[in-house]
Image (cartoon, rainbow, N blue to C red):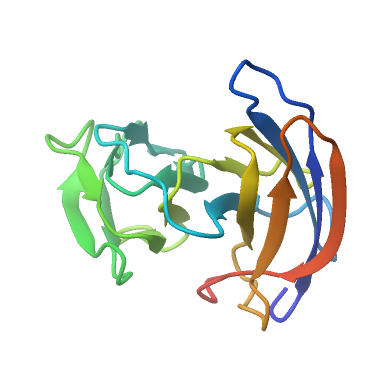
Length: 204
């Protein structure tokens, strides 16, 4: 899939609560569906930034010599646990600049979770089992989602405004225009079509 481009359809749904929050439906179209791995989609304000929410937690299991889920998306400042549910030991690590870390050979649950405090793509591996490969996408926004097998995802509860819509898929290289501008009106439907290149660190 190297060099592939993503076609993204964004649909702003009707306001659903008193503060007029909206849902954003996104469809990521890849050359082959169902996709081998899901995509990550997320939005950031076109101007300014979201206030971080401390204290979030997540879990990435190890089951049958695989990371589960294989692709995760979390907000910056989230702590992640890596329980080993296999009857063999694993040695989880990452060399990614966003979060280099190492959980040396262990069974069960490590004593301390890992804090992901910088945005970026973190590629996971196991020093013992080379077939194990996973991704944690760390973003500076609480508004994110993972696509299903058909490339569909919904980002919930967005206030009206202008946003940059990002899409990232494992193995797809970054293109010239990695973001799409999306406008969500207060209670108004809008449908926007565009071709958006994937944002990726080139992992595959």
